[in-house]
Length: 198
Image (tube, rainbow, N blue to C red):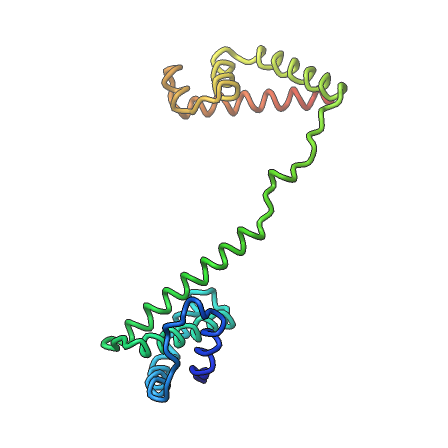
C-alpha cells in the first residue's frame, strides 16, 4: 500500500525544515504519478531493497518509503521522469547507502574502545617465573639431544621463526625434508617434556 506522500513529505519537511525549505509540498498530480509508479514497480523494488538489507522487512519498507518520498520531491522540483525504473533504483541504492552509513555510525558510537578498559596486567608470581625458567632449561637440554640436522632445522623454525623454504635453502635440503625434521623434533620434545612432568 502506498504511503500517504503528502503526509510523509510534510512530516519529513517539518522535521528538517532548514534542509528542505525549498521542497514544494506534493499536489494531487504528483500523488497520482507516484501512485502509478508505485503500482508498477513496488513489488520488484521491494524485493531488490529487501535483498540488499539482509531480508529485514521493516528496514526494507522504511527504505522503500524513503524512495517514494524522494521520488515525490524529485517530481515536485520539476525533475524529469524519462527512465522511471532507473531513477527509482538509483534513489533506492542511495537510500541503502545512507542506511548503511547511519548504521555504521551507530555501531562506531556504540563500540566501546577496549584500550580504555584494559584489565590490569598481572605480574607473574616468583613461583611461575622460576617454573618457566626451569621449563626453558629443560627444553634447551632436550633440543641439545636431537640429531644435528634435526636440531638445526628445529632451532631455525621454532626459535629463529624462519619459513620452510628459507630453512630448505639454508640447509640445502628439500622442504619435505625440513618438514620431516621438524615433525621428528616436535615428537621427541613433546614426549620428553611430558615424561618429565609425570
